[in-house]
Amino acid sequence: MSEEDDGFGRRGLNESDVALPRTTVNKFANEIATGLEVRLAGETRELLADCCTEFIQLVSSEANEICEKERRKTIMPEHILAALQALGFQKYYEEVVELHQKQVKEGEKSKSRGGWAKMAQSGVSAEDLLRQQQELFNLAKNDPLAGAGEPQDID
Image 1 (cartoon, rainbow, N blue to C red):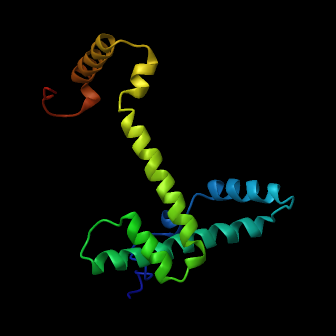
Image 2 (cartoon, one colour):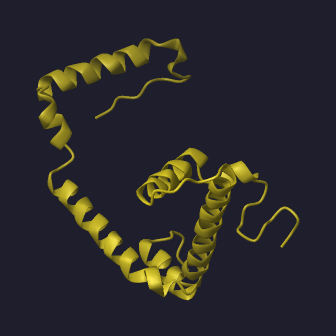
């Protein structure tokens, strides 16, 4: 491990490049604290955000190692689940599996409705949508800031 590499493959990145958004972590922590009828000190929120970031980096690093052993280039949910087990988080494993299965089912439901579900609900006809799209293409084609080079036809 070099001076630039911290062991998680984060060469040349500063702390803010790999940290979770503080506002997101704070919002989540405050919601839980409110439910428990406690308050969190500022230092506690910062520590919690740091812990969340480190946990995600730990699990991601382990999942990456598992992925590399399988000679895969993409970390899949199965790799995250295997990482949780390898790191000794069996206590949370079943809950995470259930959450993942729920997400998969919800994803399948949205796919079964088709990609046009929102478009159909908008009340705009297909002809109007095509006309609007063509107008946008023409605006972009005539815009000198739209980029160098010749516009290409889109089929």
